[in-house]
Image (tube, rainbow, N blue to C red; front, side, top):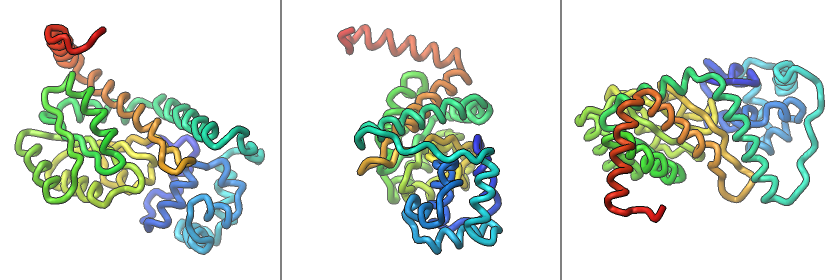
Length: 278
């Protein structure tokens, strides 16, 4: 788990309620800013009540939020006030926020350990089921479209209910050994249930999610995180989409000969059928 700010370590071993997870997520995403905010401001940032922030701090073993804030300042490593809000309109600020998320993702990828482990697990799975429900469904389909060019059997699981359980069982019976799951806010309950079912069935689970304190990370053998933009009416998934392609690259790196052979076969096929104009 990559934790450049040291903040995630505060929550390890602590069972958090859904409300407390929202607070923890906000602290992870805005670590340097949170170190200089009041409990009321953190509550507004996480969209919870102020007493919830106080209870959260106490659940972590602190007397109250001021004590937790002092610890956050220690982790930040300096007492420099946070940078004032950016200028520009709402759309500009949202796009710049995505640029920061990509920068943070790039920093995380300096440590290749988790990514390499994920690539090895997923490359060995035949078939490879890819789970993505609700907001994550398009991202799962995007990953699977390209993965199908280098893997022989990629199965998108994008609908819930009893059909999802059926398709998980079918993939396992067909020989699947791992599952890639994309789980984004607001974390569909069915996605978490599917992760539990997959692990109970003996599948290794690789999860792309937005935060180390995401509830999906609890059910992952390998959790890979990329922040989600929250400045517009609906979330921006720029960094998770980039991460999905990085994961696919890791799969190719884990089995380079097979990936190259299948990619060449694909190119020959589309050329013969004149699928593309260039």
